[in-house]
Length: 421
Image (cartoon, rainbow, N blue to C red; front, side):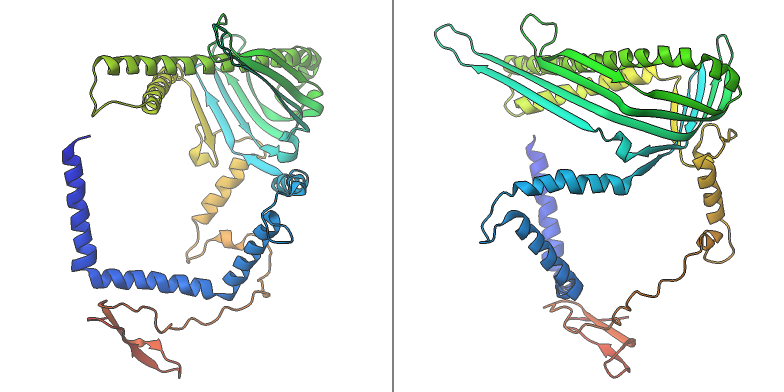
């Protein structure tokens, strides 16, 4: 906002322009010519040309009709939703999650071997509805705007096999310590929820939007304990536990969704109020050089709100630690080894990679795949003449290193002052 910054920028620009276009002009031109030559060789490569032509044909087929005119093809949207996206999810299929660790003054919890299946997490049904009402009035008739939206998701399933866990309660009664393996299953219609929201009215406690309805339903939820120090106790308490757990989770998720939406509305309103306050202060003390526009005011208010939230979060979670570990070296509890843990195998391979006397470690010997023989050999690398036009550029003289067309080594000379290597 000061003239000194503009003067400093002009000085830097002039000095840089002097270095590039005057003092080191030949070197600059040579480097630019080499980049240009590299780009030309890339374009001349037969495989790159074939790939470019194939991509051009693809986009032409997607967006043009038989006469070459741009057109919208509705069946391509159907292909995207019914063929491409499902195939993408099927190919990803399994997504491994690293070892998750949590510690606070009361509990230590470790969960490992979480393998998320993309086909399960993708909902079977996704619904969205929107209802808009707009009124413009004159002669003391107020304008009115109302928007209602509904989001519905159903059929979110989960099938987690051989999940390793560790739980230790450090304070309170009863003191519990358990370690084992379990299966978590959520099948059938699984997790379903519907959220209805609309713009807030003047007499509402919310300012921009409000939640009018939240319904969460969980069906076919089951936990099977395979290994546990309290397996018999869990088998006896399991029916009562699941009966109390399912409605509790439903109510907790409903409350969490409602609270988060209300919190978001409160944050947006607080940001808006701070931006309005900044605008009033700017109007009272006008400073044309430092005045902020409406976007800058809202951005500054949002940054201040985010920083206060971060400071508050740090104070709340000061005694809580959450960690994701790929190996035991990254773990908060390196001495706790869960059965069939992914981190244990990753640690084994990492330690194996550090062994070996030669350039290769024993990791390169894992597996029994044979050498691939069907790959075509690349063309031999030769010196391309005319790599740079370099008017006024530096001359590179290479002696005894570059083979000529007849197989003998020779020197290659380009225009400009000589530089021997």
